[in-house]
Amino acid sequence: MPSEHTSTVSHDAIELGAHLDVRKMPAHWLMARLGKRVLRPGGLETTHWLLDRAAITSTDDVIEVAPGLGRTAAVILSRGPHSYVGIERDASAAHLAERALAGAGRAAGATRIVHANASTVPLPDGSASLLVGEAMLSMQTTTTKQAIMHEAHRLLRAGGRYVIHELAITPETIDPALAARIQADMSSTIHVGVRIGTVREWRSWLEQAGFTVEQTTTAPMHLLEPGRLVRDEGAVGATRFLCNVLRTRGATSRLRAVRGVFRQYRDHLCAVGFIARRTDSTPTADAG
Image 1 (cartoon, rainbow, N blue to C red):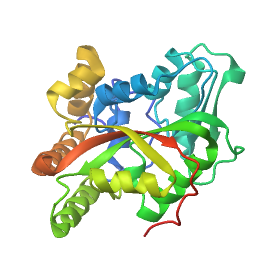
Image 2: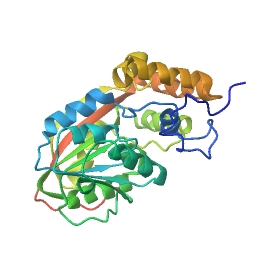
Image 3: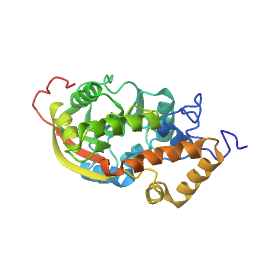
Image 4: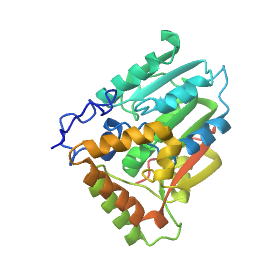
């Protein structure tokens, strides 16, 4: 029978969830271990859409929350910001992000990873002109979301841009009972708590934290669909990932279940991206 760890499994991400059984680890860790590099709900297309409109320049000091495997960090650095800081809570992921930055060819002083919680970042007020966060707020309670957004407001200078890329429920008029069932089914399948809102609710959370939303985009939730896999990973990367899935005990059934829940609720799920700007107004108290 195939072993749990084969020579084709991604060595860069092998330590993520190494102590967990394939059947129990968070789905995004499993996908990373198997070689998937893009773990964002709207794929690289949404990431590039957001960063294009954020218009990074050589004067920007960028903070990215939860850089993970460093794929978005590489895109950010390719645009030549003045500095880059990644905030990563998970020690293994922080190590992987540091490794990714080391291969980016930037001076040591211009890029670094800070091992910290996104709601209590040990950096001064106004440290950044741009703050980026992808696929991490969707796993937080409403109270924690607001704490992280308020911290983003503190870290940004006046007029600073806040870019987020998350998962949303659609339509705006969805039955609350159905929305609750979707989140419960996804949480039990991917083994991570899923706590998301509609596009309007995401906008409201940003506004309560003191931001003005300037641009919004949505995309289908096709994370494990063949077409998205090829667009995100390239033909070679997608083939390598699929081979790793087939060769790793338990991975096929696990990811079939994950894709199944995405497909079951595909009419009620979408990726959402926002470009918001810090305003001078005082953020409201945490909601929820």
